[in-house]
Image (cartoon, one colour):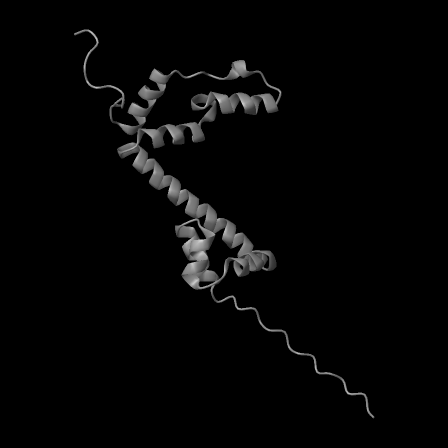
Length: 150
């Protein structure tokens, strides 16, 4: 009986047609689950493709970064118009040495530097800075509007 060679089954071409839509949506909203839903792909497939395809992985990282930048821009705008708390959070995030001294002390300790290098900011200085950056006066939620000297 002649030796029959089994025909090699051709490899399936991996469907990448969803990549552009996924990346576009990830760039608008930095959430993988939402981006997957928008193009009908399971998140495990998306992560597998991220591992398999170098260019897709790089584009994914860039789209995520773009989405986060859009989110940050929206947060800054909101902080300037409606949210003192958000303004404080953003100041602490973007300039921790000045506005988040506890974090700065930990960072300096990890680098074996002295915490004296940190400029401490008082609450009133922080309020003044928020007022300048947001161009609106800070209203203390605990202040009932009555003066103590009445």
